Every structure is written in C-alpha cells, then in structure tokens.
Image (tube, rainbow, N blue to C red; front, side, top):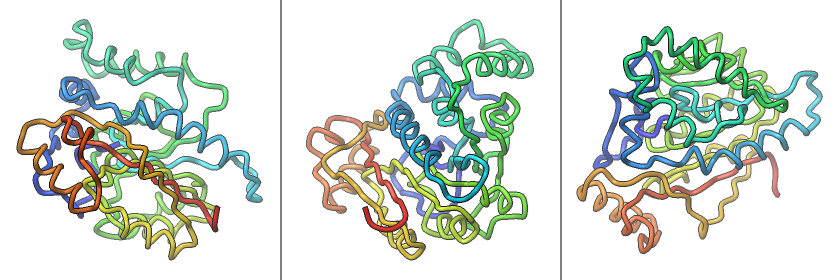
Length: 280
C-alpha cells in the first residue's frame, strides 16, 4: 500500500512528496506517525470495496479447488491485508501505532503483540493475501505478524517475477492497489498477468494526478475490461505544502479533471478502477 512509492521505480510524479524512509523501518510505527498528521485515509475507503471484491471473486467457480488469493501491490506493512481480513479499522491502527505506550517498545515485543492482536480479530471469511513491495523490512514485518500469507520483493518495473512469485501468482484471483499507482506502471501489471493462471480481477485506487490509461490498455491486452465512475472520488491525504498542492492541481487539470472542491480544497483525491475479464 505504498502511498509514497515504496514499490517500483517507474512513473514517479515529480512534485509529489516522497516518504521513502518510512518503509525501511523494522515496524510500522514511523509509517503511522508520519502519515497521521496528513490524515492519510485511502485504505479506509478501500476496505469495504476490497472486501466486496474479494467475496465476489471467491464465489466465482474457476475450476480450482482452493480459494483464490489476493495480491496486494505496494503492500508495505500489510495495512490493506489487515483491513481486509480482520475486524479492525484504519483508525484503530493509527491509535495502536501512535500510542505513547508503544513508542519505546522493542520491535520484537510489538510484533509479538501484533501477532496476537490480529489473530484474535481474524474474520471467518478471511482470504489468503500475498504482498508485493520492494520495501523488504515492511513486508517482512507484515509476514511475521500474520497479515500476509506470503511476501515478495520482486521489482517488476525492472524484470519478470522470480520463481517464488510466479508460483504464488498461479493462485491469485484478485489484485489490489492503493496509492502505488503513482510509482508503478503497465510493466508491473503486464509482468503479473503474464504469470497468472486463474481469472484475475483488479481493484485499484489511483490518484487523479496519474494517468491510468497505459495500465488500462495493458489490462485490455490481457482480456480485462476496466470500469470507472469519474464522478466519485476518494480523499487520499492532505498536501504536505503549497508546492505539492499546486503540482496536483496542475496535473489533474492536464488530465481533464476539475480540482474544484477536491485538490483545491487541500487533499489528493483518488479514482477507483475495477477490471474484470470480458465486458460487464
């Protein structure tokens, strides 16, 4: 769920603030402390959308005996996996990881507590979730505490998936994305879809400052039809400064969007793209 681009190297939007240092920590406390003042909220909006998509995809009989897995792109510390499979909210996670009593705690102790915390809130309809992000410390933590069933750090902007990820992709039926659309391109999606074996759906929240059309074309080449409700946007986070806001306003206008009431009001906004096989 790499809001600031912890996954991939292509498509970096010049003018957008980066937070790369929060992804190389051994646990998610700095991530939440840094993003809390910016009211980063897109995983909250994605939570019901991803739950519905995962349930619908799991109900599809595709001839495979096991439930299809979810692959969360740019997954960082497994936030989307936590919200998908557990009775927790994003607000709960902010409170947990910014609380004063956890700031002096060792990573080992925090991980032990997190493992128990999430296990006790596991939903009965939980689905397997794989995570992909080049930020190794982040995905390792998510794996250690049980949020991810498997974790990979392959950089698909630079090359094809390795043997482990290729094996995992054979079980993937849904790909999710929040935020990383600013930093990964159609190269990543093409590499993924070239290795999948089951019908794959994609549910992606992408900033309005980014053109998703190259990815839409790549998905269409793999038989996926993409739908979008342009009128419905999802607030992402506050801007870090006026420079970033002006960058966003200029970009959304260049892409044919109206920033009034959205970016002009002080926040990044995202669009939700959903891609499924065939026509809908």
